[in-house]
Each structure stands twice: as C-alpha cells, then as structure tokens.
Image 1 (cartoon, rainbow, N blue to C red):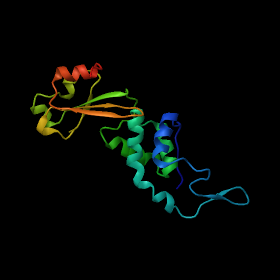
Image 2 (image 1 turned 120 degrees about the vertical axis):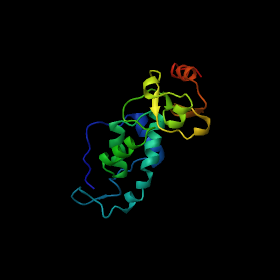
Image 3 (image 1 turned 30 degrees about the vertical axis):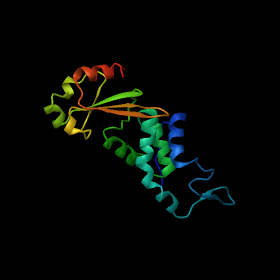
Length: 176
C-alpha cells in the first residue's frame, strides 16, 4: 500500500511503546528484499495483513505510556503496520479514552452519562477545570464514577465510585 505520511515523527517514548508490542523494526521494508539494482521488491502483503489486528493494542500501548497519540506516533504505527494514517486517526479519535492532543500524565476522566448525572454527578458544564468529560465508564451501579489514569512506563488506573464533586476536584489537583 502506498502510504501518505504527513509531517511529524514519533518521539523515543512513542517508539518504545510501539516497538515493545510489535518488536523491533526490521532492516528491510516489510519483508521486502533488495534486488540487484538496489530497489526493494515485496510480493504480497500477507505478513503485514497478519499484523493488522494489533492496531488497537498498539494505540493502547502509546496512549498508556505517553498519555495521548501524536501525529508522529500515528505515522510510525502506519509505517510499521502498513495502515493508512487516516484510518489510524479514525480509530484513535473514535474511542473516548484516546486523545490526539497532548494530555498530562495524570488524567481524571469523569463520567457524564445519564446514570452518573442522575446520581448527582457532573455535567460538562460543572466539571472541575482539568477534568476530562467521559462517556459511560461502566460502573453505573456505583454512580457517579471517575477513572484516574497515570501514564508512563508503569500505568496506573483507578476507578473511584461513587465520587463526590469535592473528591473529583481533589483528584484533579493531584491529591491521591
């Protein structure tokens, strides 16, 4: 597939996150061999198509380590999996817990769906500054709920439910 790569390169942390899942990149281009003229020739694409199912886990790996998915990371994933950057961007922006804009290492995702609102939870208008509005976190029976994610080499995720608005403000301020 001819990939149209935009500007932007993956940083070291993004490459580590991607390569830790996919393995180190090979010297050849997707299994292609150089012919006598120095050009790369690859027949078929079966080996790459077999890796396509790793797109979502690769996005998780980058998001967990860095906190968001940059254009550079999208480009690098595109080259490693031979998937169009636009398709990767579409997947990355579909899921609410992924973001393509820089985020802090500590993220406080606050559910603003109906069950949490009905249990005196936050709305987008009443979210504390720094909190991230999130669709359902799947803990409706204990609403309202909050998911705290601390990204990095070791990812920490914690669900707090039920959570008061005071607790949410404290979490955003960095208190445990």
